[in-house]
Length: 514
Length: 109
Image (cartoon, rainbow over all chains, first blue to last red; front, side):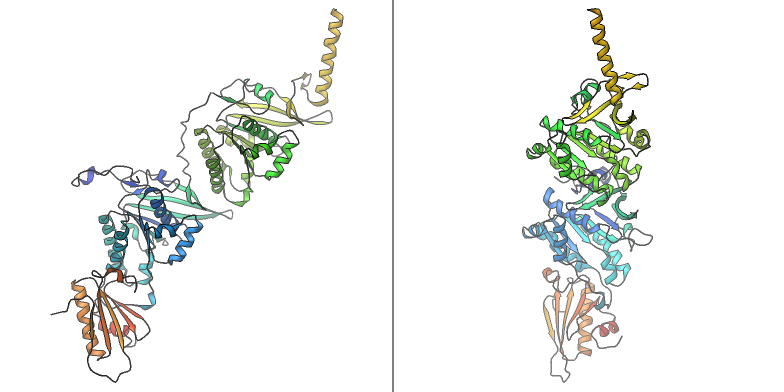
């Protein structure tokens, strides 16, 4: 059922002991920050400038009321024709036509032409009440949307009369027992042009769009929710092919079950370096390094290991297309095609400039919800710096890691360190979200560039702190033995030479002994 | 005594040489004071200014609520001048005679 709390059994229950009933909206994230939805049987005012999404929010409330909570609804629209409404809703994936045919929704379009109206004496808005009453009674509606109330003020005379009639309307809606959303356009200094927020005293929601760095972002804020605690921040949200989605940052807390299980990184010797067993299931791993150090290879090995365990995995790339990734990894013995064919792997490529940060999070969230993987990689997370600041990226990562941790999904992130910079510098802001951190480096010596890695941190386990050389071979990543020389860890030819000398020494001592 | 409001049609009697025939529709909400005032007022105006050249329909939306959508009724009472064109909409109890006459195109603004 839609209501969160049961209504008091006795009609004589006093106002103070009446529990505040709420009606779930079904809109992603909104029910969380309102603590259960909108006030049942009351009117909620949704205000904001043009194009901020008021009609969409109101319509989704109505649509989901029917689709998910079996509460028929009435839409009274003042600006659009039924055809316009149906088409707009269709583009959001809401099939309004069938709801109208099956008598779950009634649409009444009020057309007011200011040109032809003359005030010839005292009037009221009883005609509105009659039409609304008819619509509600005809299907037993529990939800009502009036979109938008401004037309009454712009098309009819005598604003004082309109205001008092609206006041009467909200009381009437309450007596009818319907939960209503009323939309209104924002004024210069007031939340609504005509000061409706004084009359709708139960719940007021403000929608805004702000443009920064040429990117438009949408925000929702609960201005007022009488009798209820509610999220007070400005919450970013997106509107896409499935309606509105909010992501309340504080919703995911720090209480998840830490897994004791280990999973392979895909590189056996790396697992040995990680306390002998690999990463913890459900942990977040960061692999950072400058360009060409082999990050993508580690990410791919991690995903490959998951697929070989018959677990589903998602590879999210901001740099390469799925076919590029498959081809590149083929050359080192990682066969993604078979995982793709078996439905164990999904590769998603995005251009980071194609949308804003919240939309990216939504896309990733959606893919995860659809595919239900056990492992996810993002390659690289640093691409998002092109479209947002570190603060917002960190927030987004906090939400993402929180989400994945609660589901026990392991996450590996690639992070590009600009050449010359240290990984600590660029990745420091997100290091607190990371359980294991692997640095990849290039070491120049003896006229060669060789690759090396070191485990910078790995919570909850004894891990190697040695710098070790690794190679990318036709069979994947091969981590070499640690060889010390006078100048520290040796890599490349120096290591091979030293290693060969050692072997020769051992042979010699055997010969000497025998 | 007044006739019951619903569906009452009044026509002026007698021939007239004036060319225009008025078709007026008055929507009211039951028998409230305002409704009755509007009916009285429009009858008076019709008799005084339209001679015999009118057809007046009075529609009580409490009795026939489904008729509200057709003429897009929101405010009550609403008087609609259907003929002669253009369509005019006058809201209120019609006590402002001058405004009503303007609405009926019998007075200049």
